[in-house]
Length: 210
Image (cartoon, rainbow, N blue to C red; front, top):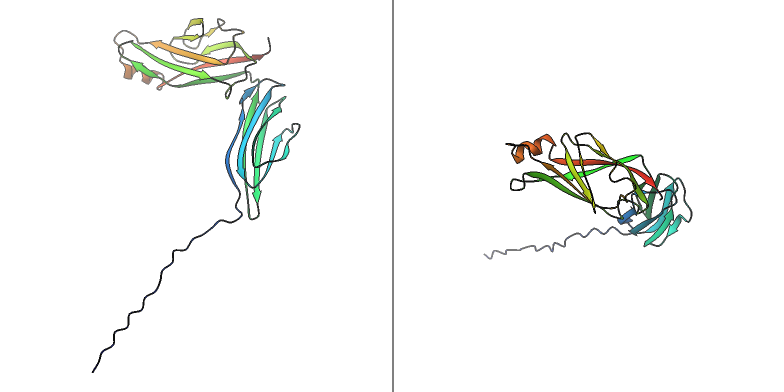
């Protein structure tokens, strides 16, 4: 008696799901993020699909655009730029805000402490992506619970905790700012960083023009 063994072989083909006709947004930005009224703001984008640039409030020359590009728009007030990409079965949307000449804005970041220098310090570069070159300093306030030495270019000022300085008045906001706070006698780096919540900050009041 013969025994027959049959083996069934089934080919397994991996399923590939393709998103045909899907829109996507690769990048979108509006710079500078802080501007003066009448400034040209550069909006840059890259997307897949039919692209429409919008704004609230409306500015000149918004509307349908190429899928990738860069264009300047004039702003007179706080403006929210939007990018919508649509393609067959999907639609994507994102936005970028530009603030026009706010009364003041706070800058800062995580500070580093040096036991050798007996100080905590921070460098804050403000470039064209952050602030308009037309913005001028109208006031500087130390937002920390201890005195700091604030410097930018050739200007340097010691500002008490919560105090203000006129040393930077009419200086461009753009540029590299440095903050330094000396450690008290016997104070450790950990203690100093704890008092400022590991951050050093300063508040800049703005003005536009000469």
